[in-house]
Image (cartoon, rainbow, N blue to C red; front, top):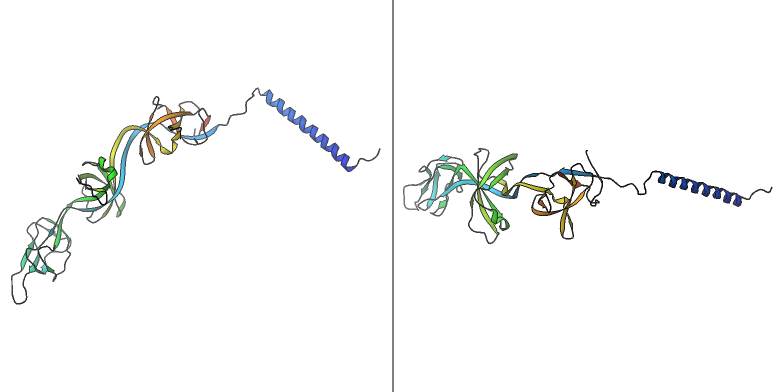
Length: 307
């Protein structure tokens, strides 16, 4: 027998390989039929959920303000001249009628008695803008007296929030000197007019409790609570899906492993949550899919992470 050429030998090996592959494919197909299922295995997607429940929410805005004495007054001399001396220093406590400075009204070639400048109110000296020897008239403030036992915060609220403003609104105040502390305050006064240039309203707040750590002149961060919503249902805004002009979320009923594409009505958005109502029923025995919903469809099988 003649030796087979290398080409013929290659053809024979290739033929046997194809026969073996066909046999394996057939056995595999027969094995699938033996499982009794004509459908491919369904994909089960892992998701994260949160329990649907009602809670209280507060709408707020964050603004800045300055802390000042609630009651302060600049003190003026009753006659022009120069400041001869001051009887107080910054931080001095004074009573109504106390002498705070002396003004010398004399001019070259004449002599007059020193004129007393007295405090019109009781309080603390919070400003002495002029030095001794400075010439003053009846419109020049010599000192400023403030009642530091009662401090207030002055802030300005944008026009779009004006409809919420009213005395009694609560606020949390934060100070740079005490970044971990929260000081409670409430709205005491709301300006009756809107500033045409800044389109804001001036609002005055007072602290609920006196605290000697708070000083006039401090900068304040104010979280002003505009409206409170009692026992409302809310969901993370990022979970809401808009389709054909309607809004939906994915819910999983208690004891179920399938998701349900559920239509909702949306209300106020507060920070990263949106108040909602269901178009049909309350669904409070369900959980809301908050992660992994991007590729879901109504009726998709899911596995809840952490369970």
